[in-house]
Length: 318
Image (tube, rainbow, N blue to C red):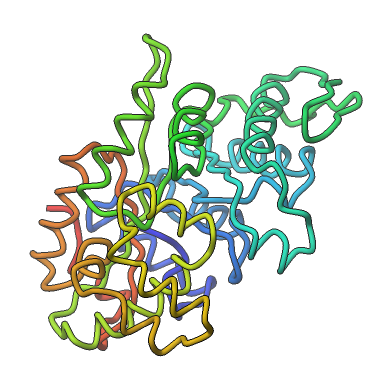
């Protein structure tokens, strides 16, 4: 489950974490965009629900300096030995450039260099290295975790997916259909060394409501907000949605937001936004797992009167 739940304060999550454990969930994963940071919710979960595995999905590679990033990761790994997964990624030009005033340049190279630095630093090495996108001069991590956390990379298209398979411990993806998962997961595993296991994590957007018209209408706002961001637009072109999303992209570029929303086909909404009865949602989630997603991470949207807390039981693993 993605934490924190929408419209629930962090300090109110103690009982929610216990409910997640009791309902059969194994993991909680945080995100980092315009709400809270990626580490504080996991720190609370580490203390309040030590049964849960913890992951960031994701923290950006650009918005913290390399040393601070590895300190944050090492602190979580030390707080929850063997239960923390460090998810890192390029994020997007919106978050990095518009909101944090940091140039969004060479995202592939930046992620590659951050992965290499994190591995070296969390191994206890004194790092003096000129990477392609930054220099490190004599940094040694004083809090080396007892168990170095797996590092998974946010990846959409082939270059990042192959990097995730080759140099990270797996990939995190989102905004894809269950059918798309087959293509994405295969690239990660094909790029991995022969003796390496790789985890494929997918953040899935879920609304357990049968109020189909309202859910689709509100889901279109979320889809338009994301899939007009350049990295996501290129992802869906690569997945083959040039024709089905062309109307949305054209109207959005022309500044006609209303027409852009109307141009998103129901079929696209239903492919990448999980909705319906709880059983229908579970069946849809199962299709992702059948197609290569090892860890489906649910993000509950409160459309159609859905209560995110009640949805914990509604969507609980079978």
